[in-house]
Length: 457
Image (cartoon, rainbow, N blue to C red; front, side):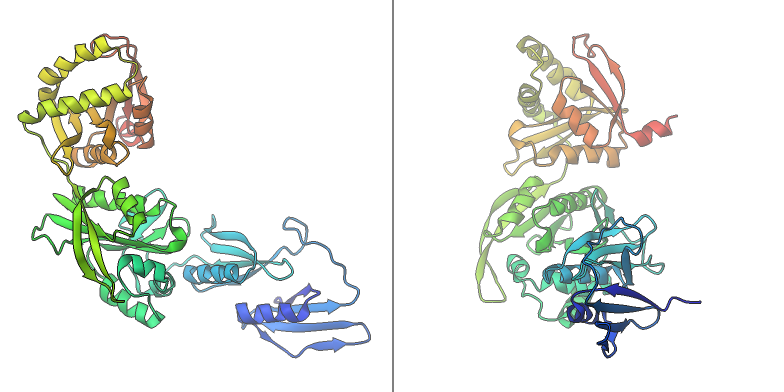
């Protein structure tokens, strides 16, 4: 036994037949007509497997289709790849059809979306688990992204992104005119190139952009790399690029041990400027008339840089103390002026010299953030009030975790902002003291990364 066909009633026989032929590759037979019964039908075949019979009759009832009713609930069509599911879904969206289920990976590994046909019948667009698809070439994984090397089968999605003139005009290259052009560029510029990656969504594996960190042609220094990126316009404004940049910055500073990472963008590209400034990059100036673009425009370059973390000299202690005081006054509202003045000489004369200090400077060489480590834990982490929100604290903390194998930190219980930061970074509260180390009435919370806590059991 094998299933021969599935039948659907419709009021729009011709339109529904055209839908399944045009969009899903079906082949229709000649229309069957029974004038005595007022019955008409088409058989739509899809190669091997059951056919679909579309039927119309004058006395059929117009009963709404509900997803969770008994009986037939959807039709499922297999697609050769995730990219094809995504392409088809977006085509249906652009044609005005309802997307009842956005692309996702199901619990059993199928990649699928759900589209409604003209009559509201649910069509599952399914790509079975790809056993031959590379699974272990992800370079970085963030909360929402997988960042991996480019592949040859990225060509169609690559072209779909890069044919958009809004993308090329922000990055300085001509919109792609054909998939053949995209394949050639993909092969020559992206595939196999060191430290150039595809940005994909973790839940759908959809290619949405690219990011790379390459030698800076304006600097003859092997310890400097230049950051570059682009993102498909449909995904602008969702924080994806900031997320990808942070992962690549960690790689550049922690793995490559770079001293400086640079980046350039056009003055009119405000989105790129926001990404760079959100990640702590410093604008060092304008390179006037820096580039002649493919369409004859001459643009300036806004030049940015981001320095790595370094060790201070003892001559820097007064400046570090000022960062400490400014930050404490901005965040430690529970401290009295008397207690700030009590701690200040202790910090300057005892604490700073007793721990290993790490600092970040801005474009003027001014210290904007610092961290202190002992043999066991992160003792201090402070950022100047005017420099907060630029990723300095995150960079220092990740440096301590990844490069110095630190997994513990103490924080004042009343410092809600700092506590929230450490909790978002994965730390968990494991203990509490009623007073601080000097016996003052400021409770201290002891935090630790879960992996370290489990390892210590």
